[in-house]
Image (cartoon, rainbow, N blue to C red; front, side):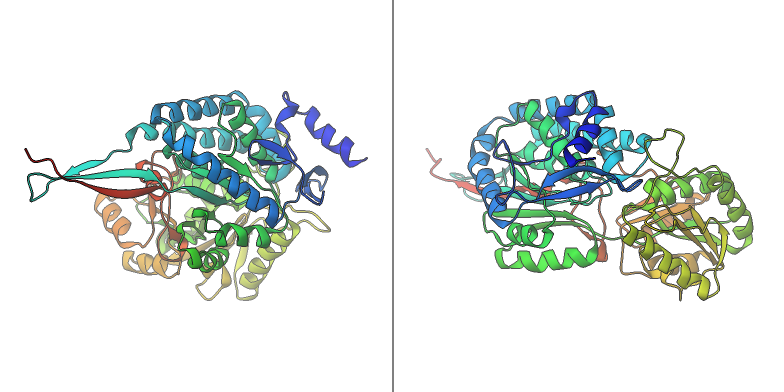
Length: 497
């Protein structure tokens, strides 16, 4: 089948084929790469070509930055209420096209349709939230020792922003960055991951339909991530970079931005512990931990990475978790009966297998799952590892796959020490019915987010982000606009009679 026919086939699954965009969006125009080159987007469930997408380079990225700079001034000059109205229209259009957007996401990313629908609603919620926050950017009048002066503090948009987003949440990560930027009057150049560019391009199409002026949201798909990334980091017109991805890449981008002293938001890797104490509701804990561990086939930055269970309930908890995992069914995410799709690439599968093999070689046992697809398959069976220890790679490394290693601990102090024994500090989870312990442990563990008897902790209304080598800055909540604003002090004198 020719590529044109394959793309047409994907489009026929959609009620609105116009959402399947394969060109870049620069200054409101849909364009090809200057040299005409493209790259293929593959369905990780069956390796079929979903589409071929424009493969941009440094020159096109510079034009996108120039377009963003030219467009931002008029946008910032609009009232907050006008900007809010456009964002609210964007939010409405996203919710009005949930099914098509979910299909596009499942085809290119692999997650099951139910999760894709959930992500679209989650993405839309950030746009709605920041549409309202646009109206709440307040200044201050400061007291002065002189009676003929007034001190005024105003907040102004930082300018052109760049966003580099990951493949695991291709719509939500754009919304979490673009919505606050646009709300306060900034413009943006966004680079989607080459694995999943179609979701972001569809979001940009809907932004245009919502009336977002040309040049404010530019999308530069590429396989040449290093070339485009270096341009976004080194170009002095870009005032802020927001990145979600690995800590290793985040460090590289931070160094590249140092030359122009850009403002940075970094949401990086995690090694999330889930601590289950002996007074926990074990059924609730197993259900919650399973949801946090196996969501998106284990491919989220806040996935449970280490399950720490008190010794006296270890076996009972393992049995409860096995019951949950036993209900799972893996397969193509377009099949509504499937609960878990593939991992993103064969390379990702092999990386997960290496971690499991290392654990088994060091004495771990497989309590459930453990099968890996052969050949070019991307499917990993949801897996539980028991008898694991802190000298195994699964203790210190982010697994990013559907593998749950379960560790034992004795005392509360030991659990806290194990949880903190990592350079990461993004998300963490605690299960206990002791209210005093809830507070003690939540305050003692070194993470930017703590879920107590709850693992669904991410929302547009709450600050998302980590500490230590898991990053800096926050997305969501009223804190989410801070990194997109400059604080300016104005001294107004000559006010005496």
